[in-house]
Length: 136
Image (cartoon, rainbow, N blue to C red):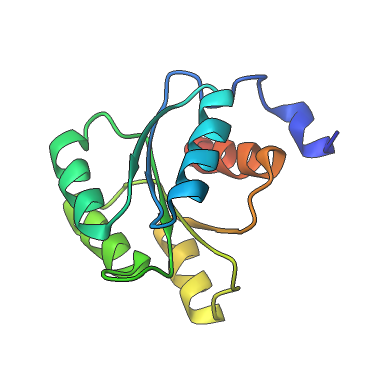
């Protein structure tokens, strides 16, 4: 077991609501199951427009947003910027199988957001999201 897991509870996302955006249906279903296993309620969406609409309608109930960076249609960075415009302190994790450039990583860090590399590993996902939710 990952030593980083020692510092987090068994269900680190218990009572939390996650908005999950990924345009790949199978990946969206798998990540939804992972997040539910960690205790979260998940609002899975398949497009940037759906993510923004869902966030607008439920922003007071959404604890964290996970966005796929590279998608057909509206990409994750565009969605990220619109969600930050709606709620500047939104907790957001951008995600991709391709590492982003340093300017994007610095922007995320400065905004209090994170990058999570795909493929997802449930332990790593738990640690990263728990840290994001609990950072000051």
